Length: 243
Ligand SMILES: *Cc1c(COP(=O)(O)O)cnc(C)c1O
Image 1 (cartoon, rainbow, N blue to C red):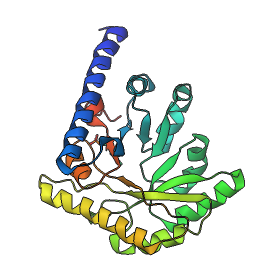
Image 2 (image 1 turned 120 degrees about the horizontal axis):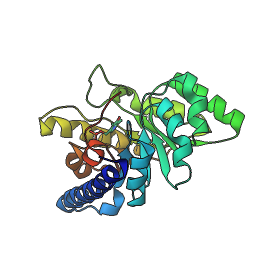
Image 3 (image 1 turned 90 degrees about the vertical axis):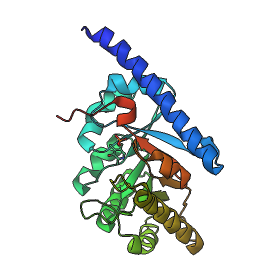
Image 4 (image 1 turned 45 degrees about the horizontal axis):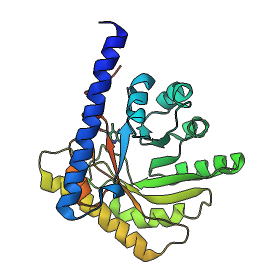
């Protein structure tokens, strides 16, 4: 098949998939009496080419998320002509901070280490910039996952709040990979609870509006439990082909 035909098929599929996700968000919101406008859809675009990403952006979904700095760098030139917002959702190594800032990332959703925050602050100071962040919390207690331990989350927020170049906007978590919906739900409820506790602490310069939780397979549960950002990849772009 020639590239153009393939692209048209793919384009229609992506449009359909985005509409399906919007319906799923709407239904979950109705179930718990939320306004669907409170929920932002982030396109998880790892392994997806700029051509395909552009189709989704043109469909009106302008928030994208990448989890590898190298991919951010590779796609940067192709995507900068089209207006969009970019979040970083992967594990951030301190030696990649410069590249991340070069790619004009609007928000790092995955801050979970003081050392990273220190180095980020230093670099932002040098460049005279600020950046939004979410604090990643490991609500599923899985060893393999990044994120700060729930018990340390409040202290961590207090420490990061001291860095004036880093603007805390909320929390992020990756749900438990499980068929057991109630176990998955517990993790999202925990993130909500931590958010409420942090709000009560009234920490200066800290905003707690955003809760980034829920992906292709668990977004309904996340929306019911208060997600303001859901991160969706495979349900929009199809199964990923890792290189
Ligand atoms: C890839 C990714 C997603 C999206 O996952 P899907 O199951 O494909 O929707 C969400 N969050 C993070 C951090 C990711 O890396």
